[in-house]
Structures are given as C-alpha cells and as structure tokens.
Length: 412
Image (cartoon, rainbow, N blue to C red; front, side, top):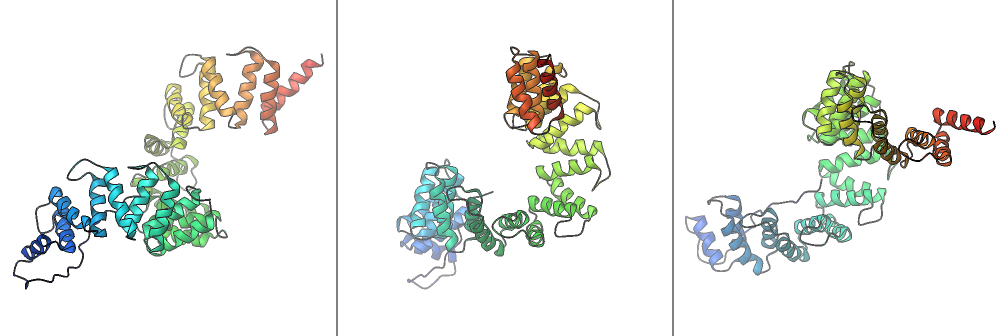
C-alpha cells in the first residue's frame, strides 16, 4: 500500500542576530518575527506537533506559510502535508498539490513522493499514473525508499510505465535494502515466481522472512505458504501453521482464508471443519472471494455446519459478484433446482452464462443443457451443441456424453 509520508522535522537554525537568551522559544520567535525562514518553519513544526507549545494547527499553518512564501521547500512540503491531512481546516488536495509541487520543483524528495501519490490517486489533480511514475522516479533517484518501492510496484504492474519485472526487481531491491517491508515482501514474490530474475525459493524465503520479522502480515502468510509447500525450506507443517496463524490472528484476510484451507484439507493442520468455517467467515467478512465461495460450499454440503442452501446461496452470490466462476455456476445450479431460493431458470441461465463466458467448463455444459431442454430459454439444439462442445473441448465428461447422445439421436 502506498501511503503519504507525513513529517515536518525541525531544520537547523543559523541565527545572525543578538546573543541567545535563556528562553530558546523566545529566541526562535524573535528570529521568526525577523523573517528568518528556518525559524518560521521550525516554529510551525512545533505548533504542528505540539512540541514545547500547545498543538495549534492554525498557528502551524501561519508560520509554515511565512517560510513557504520565502521559498523554503521544507515549509512548502509541510503545508502540503497539513492540507492533505485536513488539519487546521478542511482537507484540500488542490492546495496540497500546489505546495508539494513548489517543494518538488526544488528537488525535495519527500514532496516529489507525495506529489506522485496525489497523481496516482487523483487527489487534487486528474489521475495520471505516468506523471506519478515520473515523480516517484525523481524521489527514488535520491534514495527515498518509499518512492523506490512505489516505482517498483508500478513497473511490476505496468501502471504508468511499461511492465518490466527486471526494473521492478531493481527498485524493490533498493528499497528492501533500506528495510522497506512492502518492498521486501514484493521482492520475495518476484523471486518466488521467477519474475525479473531466475526463480529462487531460498531468496524468496529470505525476503519474506525479512518483511515478516517487521510484522508484515502478507509476508508472514507467505512464509507459512513456503513452509507448507516445502519451497526453499524443509516441509514443516507446524511452522507453516504458526506463520499463517500469526498473520490470520492480526486480521490478514488472505491468511485467514489459507488457514481455513489448512483445516479443510487436514494436511498442515488436523481436519476441523468448524475451525475452517470460522476462518473462512473472518476472511469472507473482509471481502475475500475465495473464502466466500468456500463458505458456500460448506453450507451446501453441510461440512462442519447444518446444511443450509439459503446460506450457501448468499455466500455464492457474494463470490459470484466478484467474478468467481465456480460460485457463479453453483449459484446457477441452486436457482435451477429451486434450492435456497424459488426455482428461477432465468437467474440460473444468467449465472451459467457469466461463468461459461469465463471458460468454466461445468457452466458451459449447464448452459448447453438449458438450451437443449428449453429451460428459461427457447429450445435451441444448435446452441446446446455449441456450448456442449466448448465444455467437451476442456474434457468435461457430461458434455461429451451429451454430444454423443445428440449425434446418436440424429442418426435415427
């Protein structure tokens, strides 16, 4: 996740003027009143953070503004941060963009990074991922780890730049070497998948563990997966369970889903449908589509819970609306059979088609069956054969039998 970097550190003062008194704050105010930009910035930072003075965002803005108007890049950046946060007034991305731009144009890396974030998210500007990549590049070239990670992320996805896994790996490496946990996890993933570099499970595990040690939840789940699959490490089911459990306990939906799978399969953990159901539910409530589908399956079968087609239908529908083809097909079956809802061939046909259009063979067969028998649609043997053929080409046995029966009947 790309986040705004918000810090307004104090800058060194070079006060020319009378000898310092016993009251540093009074000296700072005096310098600020004389127009010293560094003093104005530092006084603004004190009010921003409540450091030595009561926190007062209006005063922070006033002093930052004075320094920013003199061209001080740190004050310009600090103003951008305050407007981004909406402190001392309403959130104002347009103002934030203006001040980040001024500081970025002077080469201030934090401002360049935050300006890139605004372009990437379309906050205060038209969303423009190409411009985002350009500003990330400027900050990354100055060694700013968050920008290096963000630039690697864009190269990995081909977002605002041509997809280039080698470039992604290069920038992730730079950020990872500085301890950026997101970059460490993503670098591990590239080595895991062999993207931008030869596949290397040992290196993948190394970087996953580096990120996991910092509490990175996805990395913890990935470490568990590596142990579960014996990739880069010996097969250690106990460690696999421990790492996945750690991430799941902290609320990571992917880990919660993976833990559900472990309890469903009974491989890395003892078979326990009730525990599986609990973890699938936690992940599903966070929108994890695979967990939603698996909940539908468990309610449909009665695994670890009383069989309940109405609840199965609800969970299938959630997953189906996220594009899970198997859920779309199973939802269609429930409507076609009148299970969990009133018989509705129109709904069944709709969901079969959505899954079939994704190439899901079982749905292609079911759609062919609907056309062959005129369920929810006018009977159409040609379309029935077309969909049976698509399913048969993928090895679906029912479709092959249906085609064979169709040919036999046509010869009589």
